[in-house]
Image (cartoon, rainbow, N blue to C red; front, side):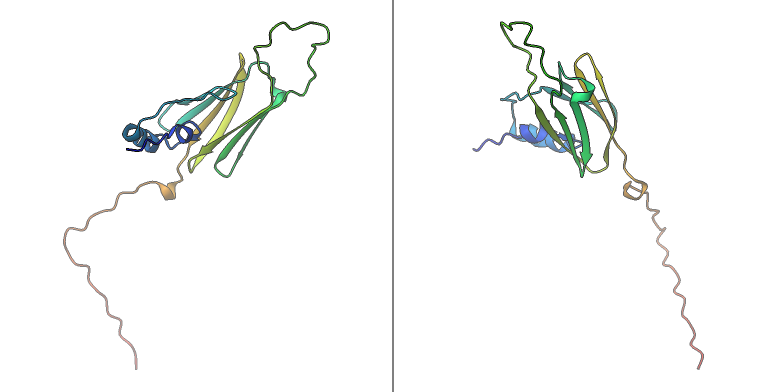
Length: 155
């Protein structure tokens, strides 16, 4: 039997969690590779989500967030030069390389805001389904056939 890894889809989409949870339960999957920067996707409410990226060393001016056509793109690039001239670095364990991370959003998922605190970038998302797309209740007739009105044509 073939094994399909749905992890790339599951970890880069927001709002499709029921679909991928169901598929993942049938197929099974594990997160093999970590990419930079590490991130979490949380469900914070019925229709609310939060994407959190660990962006230690990046400031607000070094980060850009763009939402376009069901895609959330987060870019990070250091704009200030490192002050490495004054000190010899013995070990560099904090990565500050440029990155671009994309997340596919489900229909009607919108970005509500973003905040940067303690080296973590939080992007809050919410799914707002328009009234026309919400389910509606249809009244069932009690078995009576509606009367048909015939029009009389004047000659």
